[in-house]
Length: 122
Image 1 (cartoon, one colour):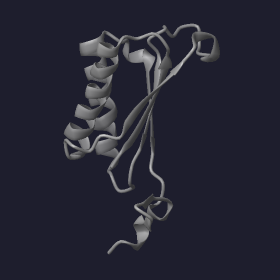
Image 2 (cartoon, helix red, strand yellow):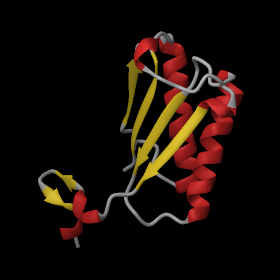
Image 3 (cartoon, rainbow, N blue to C red):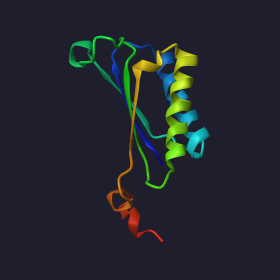
Image 4 (spheres, rainbow, N blue to C red):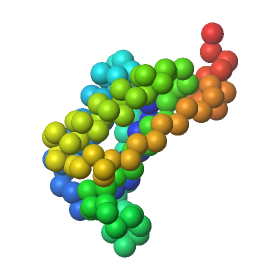
């Protein structure tokens, strides 16, 4: 149940955004084996003047935060980063240098779903 948050500069069309979401989801399916229905993604669009980035980045720069249950191997996380980045490069012509991915893995006791703490599940 990865949670995906994409922060990007405002102004991309709906088709671009749908392709972006599909690229990330496919990367998750292929690299860590989530189910196809498991889509919890959101795009946060930020006005250019409110998104400070280094001068060598373009207006296609994005920060992708993936929060997921702990337990994936370093190899799976590496594959996830590589799969998502290559899909964005291939399908949206985003420079790899404009893709910044952060993976967060909060401990199980920090997850609550349907009023139940994940660590309590048996």
